[in-house]
Image (cartoon, rainbow, N blue to C red; front, side, top):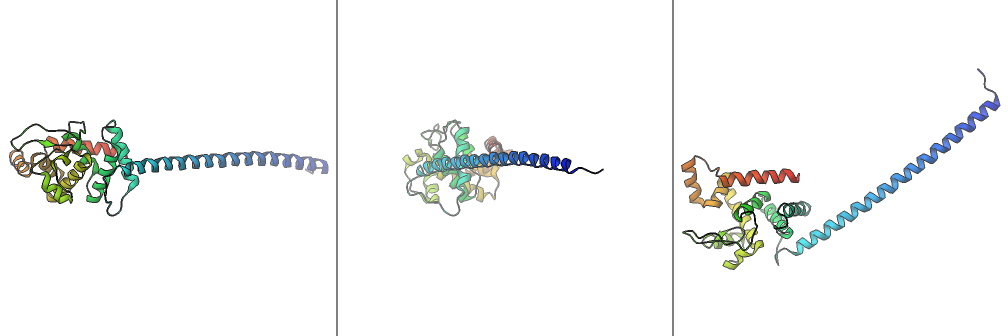
Length: 236
């Protein structure tokens, strides 16, 4: 079939018009995409700026002269701090969470285990001024519930000064608890049941518990590990 010149001209005009319309729609779509990308980029930058401002505020809450050793994953530490702050309904302050994450990273232990230990030790209050009930060895003090017969040598291990009143300082208590747990975790070759039961009962008390029960999986050790795992899963 042969097209007339006029028919070909009309077809060409229609094709050109359609192309222009398509081109106009394409350009408009591309413009919209570009605007969305710009908006998303601006929102993302604003979120980063807000995150950094919050992180700087938390950093300013670290102990005076606090030294960050080695590589510090500030983003991960900030996420941990925000997570435990929300989980504790604000009882575990964000600068405490940041310090705990940094200390745990330095000593290569799980910060969630320490957090759950502090929860159990304070009866879910995270009260830094807590005084435990009287025992034959005296009282336990502060968030980490250290006694006067253990506080001094753990403070020395942590490279910190010791005074009884410092046990009520939450940041001091956090540093001591991480140091002591790290020591116990290494001593018992990574066995959290033994390390946590020893924290709770003392090292001789842990041995006695194993003799009586066959292993070190006390309610204390099991509860802390289970809750720590659940917390970490929720964050992921």
